[in-house]
Image (tube, rainbow, N blue to C red; front, side, top):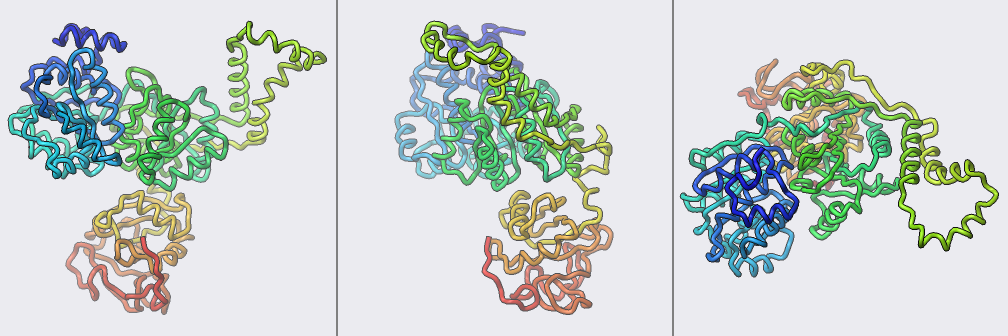
Length: 610
């Protein structure tokens, strides 16, 4: 392995990073820095989070920027406010003893007037989130005409968050002769398109196979009933020594609920999701970075760009639908060469996702066992004993207080004192875990190759109902949003819901048979984005839109909307038979999205809106 001196960096920069405690470059730094120092090369760097990408592009950038030129020479785009601030702090630390550079961070949720004032002072490097940068460009505060270097950090995350149009607008406004440096953990098609459209013969550096995970992460999973997930989470947290972790949930509602439950149960936890104000978000992140907060419960989007050192555990309360999300989640731990654990708490219907991720990462997950109540109590007792044995005693200051302590304990033996001291903490866990049941479930149907019986949880709902709903991505919904709607309006637990198949103008989801009627009734009168929600039974759960087994559409055979049960009826109005098509050319008596103005065959319309 080379040293920083051998990479072509100036002595001042090498000394600056040495004083920061960095002695040898990481693999991505060793490969990228000599290339970028040439100042005339486009580069694509593929590496997992926590591998030192900021220094890989930041150190060459400091060397290349002309400190006497006060125009904006470099632009760094990042997906979140937290990552933007982290990049700026690193660049300032790298450069403060080398060059007098004005590095300005701009992001949404903060005063735009303050950011405008800083930019106008002459920002040689701007670190920005795409949305706020577009605002400043439109206000003619930021000029792209002098840009020589553009860095896209965490490019895949920016695209996952919907910034593609903003990135296109920004890059198309920069000079043709600029250099583009793109860093990403994964290389999906959208990232490849950016490379093709805005880069010229880029040098590509890949640390490990594309999408291969960090080797320092220990991927584990436990199998529980859906209703036992929170109880299993508590046991794993209680059993883990000095845990400092991020807990991922699928929806904002789940995130808030889990965080509030943990706080109520005495854990040092808080939530991070999109409904928080910037001030609340800053408070939570400050507490987490300072480690006054032990557990951060977050959604995927809210946790983008979190760069906190020494995270020991990433815990997945729900498995994400996209592989990239799992990669970014687990990448919060095992940073800077340290070890970490990524723990998935899964029900049997989620085992297929574990197999899918194994195939992609080419890494075997380890099945962990949820400790019994006795095992948790024993672990906690030994932790307390270890702390007592190794506590530092301030002999000089405690001596004056000890006579009263000795007097109070004078009739107790050494064994009695130890028992009572240990019981101060131990009794709480003993009371909670007394007669605790075993939460572990078997996963015998799962195989490393990805047994079809577990894929996407399909086998859990072979006797369930598959339901059509006339809303989808065009209504601004993601899977988590639709899951939340079904749970809220159906007044059911998410464990009753199977696979969700989200489309453009419509979607499908699976339900356990015994709650289907309840969900249909709960959606009566509901509107989403001004569109009345309509539910229909699809009959055969294997039937595909566009007509796989029965070309075109299907004839609905069930209704929960009222009327004569012998007639084929469509939920959402009327009692007449209707034939529908979802992509085929078959006859339909009413246009898609139409139907009766009143739900349930003429009942009074409710004023529910989403």
